[in-house]
Image (tube, rainbow, N blue to C red; front, side):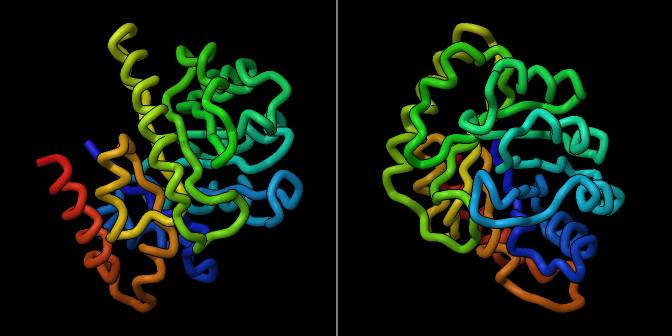
Length: 231
């Protein structure tokens, strides 16, 4: 019912393959892969070659979040590099429907990402091409930021839209949250409607070392909070 997706933005980049293997061994479901271009957002991170390099380290889905503008040129590169899910921001595409189509034609699941102040109306005419909706609960560009409380209201609104679409179409779209997700707020976020949780510093900040299961405690604590919601 719930998916935990540690964000590599907070991982040890000198040991990235090990970090991927270790968080999956500790119970994570997805690997969240943040791509920033120092143009759409004020930071520069990693590209398709890094995605290709980590692909052999896990069979878990790689969830690529494109914070780049424009997006269309780079989509095929990430699909070829082994991405399973590719999401982008509506502001970064001249033709949202076309960009979603490019992702799906490349064999990946497609999604839209909404910044804290981006309205949800971009969903209205592309639901049939969406597999994931990702809400940012911080402003994009940097890890380690605090959760913006107003995102809970936006989550509820998005959940209502997606549930209405599921009732009509019989197809469920995942609702992902990214930014400031911690053990002490993940249950409240889940109650507001999220089913997929990106956690960067909360997970990767939990330890460094040789133990492949050193992330067990924090991922287990996140799961325990979610279990209370599901009960």
